[in-house]
Amino acid sequence: AQSVSQHNHHVILSEAASLELGCNYSYGGTVNLFWYVQYPGQHLQLLLKYFSGDPLVKGIKGFEAEFIKSKFSFNLRKPSVQWSDTAEYFCAVNAGSGGGADGLTFGKGTHLIIQP
Amino acid sequence: DGGITQSPKYLFRKEGQNVTLSCEQNLNHDAMYWYRQDPGQGLRLIYYSQIVNDFQKGDIAEGYSVSREKKESFPLTVTSAQKNPTAFYLCASSRGQGFRSTGELFFGEGSRLTVL
Image (tube, chains in turn red, yellow):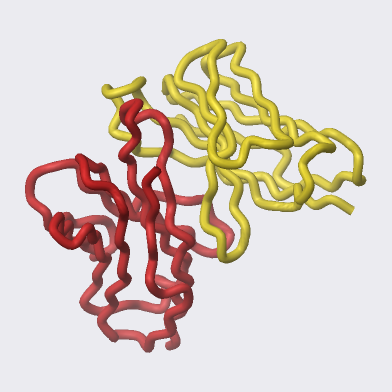
């Protein structure tokens, strides 16, 4: 079974700092990769996704992620964070043998706090 | 507006009682899912269904039951056999079945269950 590891459970940054959240997965085959965000009091929403093609994907609100197949990684980055980026971030992978519809495996999440 | 509606948002239950959480979607998605979210644990898959009248156990199905009598609806029952039911429950859906699906999930706003 696949697993997803997020390296940092809590991250505290000041506004305008650069952000990188680590995500590694364990599966040797073809994967679809996702980052979801959960803002305080709101539902989970998709930040960005990778299916194939260019390994550098851009998402909403200035976020991007790079898929490095050799490292089994899909790290999330943002050059300059804002206070409104305070949220919980989840990395997820779909690599089921039954195809895409047997659910995503999520990491444990990273709680990001941006200090003004 | 298309989306996923979960009800109730907050639910209190006494020990030993079963409770059913509702999930309805009008996105015309084939697959539906139930996840449980606990602090520091990320999201864990309880059950999923790729088609009406069919569903599969996820990673933590014990103490839960589901039904899928209509494409739009996927209710979750938390039974008295679930040892630690207090949690935040998320319903999700995705387009397509099997290998036609990319795995991208669309989430409802969640139901918070507290057992007293």
